[in-house]
Amino acid sequence: MTLTAADRLALTDLVHLYAAAVDDRRFYDVVELFTETPELRLPDPPGALDPVTVHRGRDGVATAMSALAAVDRTEHAIVGEVYAEGPEPHYALGRITCIAHHWSRRADQVTDLVWHLRYDDEYVRTTPGWRIHGRALTINAIETRPVRRLRDHPPQRSRGTAPT
Image (tube, helix red, strand yellow):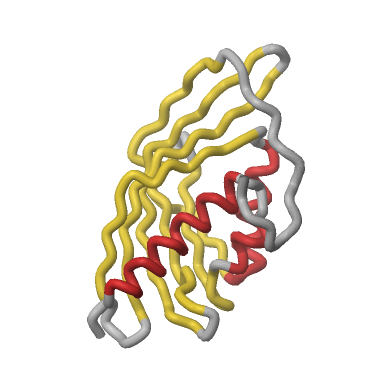
């Protein structure tokens, strides 16, 4: 199967919807971007920068996303995307590079934990469209930066509303 321009655009949308949903703390929407039987492989920083923990199923993805509740804000900047056809029809591969900021308040100090990362993705075309079936997150570098000020996170929007 050759990936069409429409497929590539749909995969780009999927990747950016994931980043936006995480940053907006819409973790239920993140889970919906995965297939019914996904596998999410994550590192355990700072000790392990390669994927070492496996979360299976949508419940596993939800559990992984819940760890972000301890962070005040995130911002995922997608800086590179490469897509390729998979070995079977309705299957595609992706390599996504990203800079992910994780801002946390501790007393009177705000810190930005920056991950320079790569997602190695497997996608499956489903009835509702392309979904993430496998995602492995590898961290290439970690930075910690002081932050002068952090905007409070806006109130949670209801599902289906347009981002602001």
